[in-house]
Image (cartoon, rainbow, N blue to C red; front, side):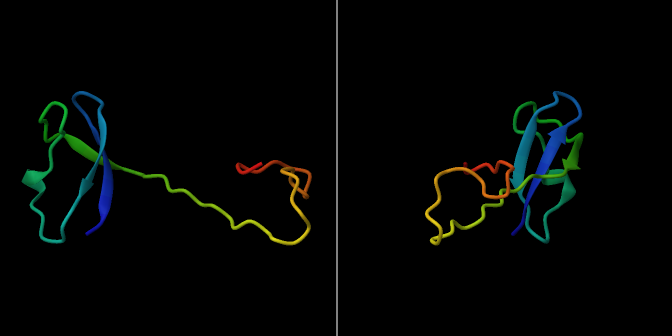
Length: 70
Protein backbone atom coordinates (compact mmCIF):
# COMPACT_ATOMS: atom_id res chain seq x y z
CA UNK A 1 0.00 0.00 0.00
CA UNK A 2 1.39 3.42 -0.90
CA UNK A 3 1.93 6.26 1.54
CA UNK A 4 0.63 9.64 0.38
CA UNK A 5 1.29 13.07 1.86
CA UNK A 6 -1.66 15.36 2.50
CA UNK A 7 -2.33 18.88 3.75
CA UNK A 8 -5.49 19.93 5.55
CA UNK A 9 -7.28 22.90 3.97
CA UNK A 10 -8.89 23.83 7.32
CA UNK A 11 -6.05 23.73 9.87
CA UNK A 12 -3.02 23.58 7.55
CA UNK A 13 -1.70 20.40 9.14
CA UNK A 14 0.55 18.16 7.04
CA UNK A 15 0.38 14.39 7.44
CA UNK A 16 0.95 11.08 5.67
CA UNK A 17 -1.63 8.35 5.10
CA UNK A 18 -1.16 4.71 4.20
CA UNK A 19 -3.81 4.25 1.50
CA UNK A 20 -5.12 0.92 0.25
CA UNK A 21 -6.24 0.45 -3.34
CA UNK A 22 -9.86 0.03 -2.23
CA UNK A 23 -9.83 2.88 0.29
CA UNK A 24 -12.94 5.05 0.38
CA UNK A 25 -12.24 8.77 0.04
CA UNK A 26 -14.61 9.39 2.99
CA UNK A 27 -12.14 7.57 5.25
CA UNK A 28 -9.42 10.14 4.59
CA UNK A 29 -9.41 12.91 7.17
CA UNK A 30 -6.99 15.16 9.02
CA UNK A 31 -5.74 13.51 12.21
CA UNK A 32 -5.35 16.94 13.85
CA UNK A 33 -8.81 18.47 13.33
CA UNK A 34 -10.85 15.66 11.71
CA UNK A 35 -11.64 17.66 8.56
CA UNK A 36 -12.14 15.81 5.28
CA UNK A 37 -11.03 18.90 3.35
CA UNK A 38 -7.57 17.58 2.51
CA UNK A 39 -5.44 17.72 -0.60
CA UNK A 40 -2.68 15.42 -1.76
CA UNK A 41 0.73 17.09 -1.85
CA UNK A 42 4.05 16.21 -3.41
CA UNK A 43 6.15 14.27 -0.98
CA UNK A 44 9.90 14.46 -0.76
CA UNK A 45 12.30 11.58 -0.78
CA UNK A 46 15.86 11.06 0.26
CA UNK A 47 18.63 10.09 -2.10
CA UNK A 48 22.02 9.05 -0.80
CA UNK A 49 24.97 8.15 -2.94
CA UNK A 50 27.28 5.37 -1.85
CA UNK A 51 30.72 6.26 -0.53
CA UNK A 52 33.71 5.57 -2.71
CA UNK A 53 36.30 3.25 -1.24
CA UNK A 54 39.06 4.44 -3.56
CA UNK A 55 40.98 7.68 -3.19
CA UNK A 56 40.69 8.01 0.58
CA UNK A 57 37.97 10.62 1.00
CA UNK A 58 38.91 13.52 3.26
CA UNK A 59 35.34 14.81 3.60
CA UNK A 60 35.53 17.35 0.78
CA UNK A 61 33.99 16.95 -2.64
CA UNK A 62 36.42 16.26 -5.45
CA UNK A 63 34.23 18.14 -7.95
CA UNK A 64 34.74 21.45 -6.14
CA UNK A 65 31.10 21.60 -4.99
CA UNK A 66 29.66 20.39 -1.75
CA UNK A 67 27.39 17.44 -1.14
CA UNK A 68 25.17 16.66 1.89
CA UNK A 69 27.61 14.01 3.19
CA UNK A 70 30.64 16.34 3.33
